[in-house]
Length: 134
Image (tube, rainbow, N blue to C red; front, side, top):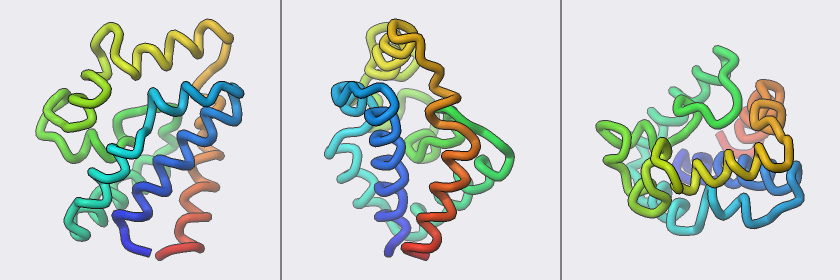
């Protein structure tokens, strides 16, 4: 498996975890859509590998939830909002962005994203991806 494919698998796993934990498929669409996958698949393999290594390091440092250090798109852009992800979903910190909508929904259903996307989830996911693809 290529690193570009691993990044897509990583993001899809996070999306599926959100959907499974909340039982609300629409929340997954706020987070990751097919256009996002296409952007990651179009990355140069060398860039994708660097991004994956940085995400892996963040997981080893116990980051969890939807932290920017766990987002491939945050590594692609020179600054927040300069990425294509922001064009599709709006800048994460902006009101009414998909990210903001996602967190509003989490609050409404009394759901903690750090529990859904826990340190354990990420460590298990990296282990699984490495077994399957690296």
